[in-house]
Length: 547
Ligand code: ADP
Image 1 (cartoon, rainbow, N blue to C red):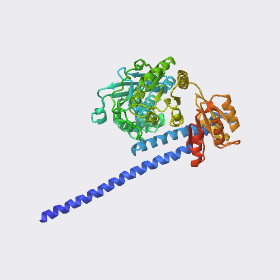
Image 2: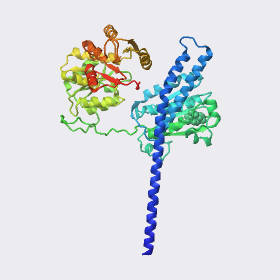
Image 3: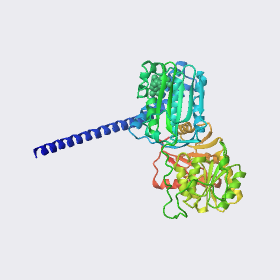
Image 4: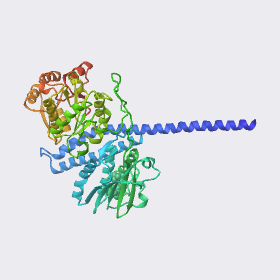
């Protein structure tokens, strides 16, 4: 009895100790989360003032009025350079703290290897030429067309590895090879072991190399191979730490092989398809709708009666995805599209359409609203939710009353049923015009000089031509004289209110489709914002603090 009591007492003690330990662990986790959150907020607060330092520093450094002496220009440039360094440092710290606190989300999508190649080649070609280094990029022909991962994060890692390789190489060159591999990664890595295909991105340089004892620590935050590195090459020692963490987030890892004096090879291993949620059921629009057949879908097959060009599409083709369940109408659309110079892919179901969009990345889509498995609205909503497909112009084909709804939900244009060949041709033509690379024209309507400058500064880009006007009347005159692709509009104008201007724009039928961005610092009342929504087909309201 006594022994039993003794054992029970001991058990209770152990239980208590366990509770205390758990509490401590929780406190620790909480503290580290607070720390990360603090860092995240602080970095954000630091960046805001830094932005003006950078913009103004650069402007001073450019010395447009030529009223600064060379020394002063040098100072301005130093301010700008130091600000840039600081900004990088802040971004890196923020990145790392976000990853550590687990608040980083991975946005996977399909990216084509061709596109990836083009991006990495372009990013470093200049540097290679400038430094007189060889730069080779090689993609194995056995690779499939696309890879499913977070493109932004993947590029972040590759750019970091490549810029390190260039930084630490004086002669010789840098080489990136991408190929499918069977081995090379750490066998304990479950994500890679379970992947059907693993892709290795190897960045090899002929630079200074890293000695064996330093190969581990270079992946730690703020660590560099030796104390002289920062002085000689700059840098913060955060790049590899971040890259390693991101590689883990993407289900992969980075390995290093190096010989001092001979060069280094950093290899990023990634699963070809990261967390592909292909089997996720496609949500079907609620109520109102009864599927005509089962929604579980086999692999997308061409519509029985309508053959298309899906097997003859090459990079650079204009492609039109036709989503239409009536085979006769699909055939008509297909033939007209071919005449207009499009290659076509035809789908008769929403689920097929969504897959085909991912596989073919069409130039444009025509979408019928009544499909056998879901409403076209659902397809449209899914396309607009995904950043990989959001930009693709979608033309809705349905009855007149739904015009407004189409545009409001993000359709590019609208085709009323029944349509004539002429209207279809005209519509296809507009899509084609829209997809051609060309300079787009933007009209900025803003009376405040400073605001005008900052908007222009914000949007200035090689393929956007910006006109600015300061009053409502001037805006109407400009709109009558030129064809604009978009208008940015301030609600507060000297001669009329923005609302009035919107109303007057509405009276011109040819301006009905013109997208208008209302840029205002004002908090809008419910009434005002509903008036805005009615007045223009596409209104985005932004506050002054969200450039
Ligand atoms: P940073 O480059 O900002 O110093 P990183 O985390 O990217 O920070 O790299 C950490 C250290 O690893 C570098 O300072 C350098 O000493 C070493 N290192 C990284 N890449 C290479 C390379 N390709 N060749 C030689 N040393 C390298």
